[in-house]
Length: 345
Image 1 (cartoon, rainbow, N blue to C red):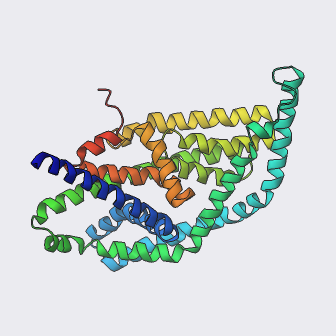
Image 2 (image 1 turned 90 degrees about the horizontal axis):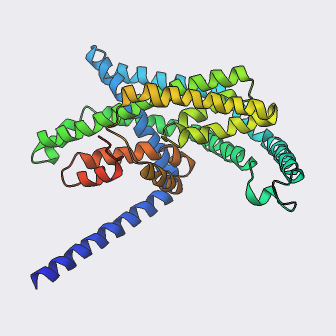
Image 3 (image 1 turned 180 degrees about the horizontal axis):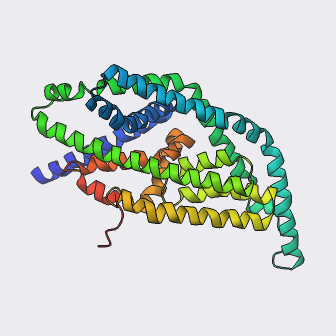
């Protein structure tokens, strides 16, 4: 009687965990407008934590250190808005024109292929591929990004309160747990690993975005600042992020100049991503925080469905955060191993 009872208890436990997961995900999706600014504030706080602690180590008062970080954040937001605000408006207003030109060019290619009898005469490009959709998706991402700037005050307040809570966290942990030293050590290890990943990844993405922006500027592609920003955001998604960042500027180059220039843009992106992603980044990032390609793809779909386009951009940082947290406990380390890449050593 004991063994069936144990099996029933385990089955019930699995069902409760699954039901809890469904309820949590449904709640996150319903509260998307609140959760997205909070997650952005959390990642900004993680990036801002090392300079905040460094300033305090240099005998800068906590309040003054926080003011310096806030002013830096506001200056950054102001510069971003100044640089890309009008570009986003201009790009979205010109989207129908670009989509029509792109459709005409692809239709001309189809006509040539029909003339050479490579495809059937009744082939319709709209039934197989709509290249203008790529530019439309990019416009939607930029529009949602602009909407996030309207929540800038809420994000800023959340960052401030998170930074103020840092100093009181050890005291709270001492009161919460029976073995506070072990708990504090575990939490510290998790936060340090997350901070290391996000900070280094952000620096690598900035290098990539800077090179992309300069390259597209010399190529003469319109809205090169927007494509640099898109490259910065999408390169948080390894493997497939750089491919998605390539499509809009390559299609726009095709509309502006022609097929040869579009190929040059593709080659330039490949060279930049190879240099940063395959040569420079592994030297600093290592392989300890990696995810399997399948997990990256599934996390992209999952977080995109739950939190929208911004959730897709945050999908890998969020999943890596979960992986690091799972890896910090012996009971859940097997799940972290399951999420990780194949060990080829």
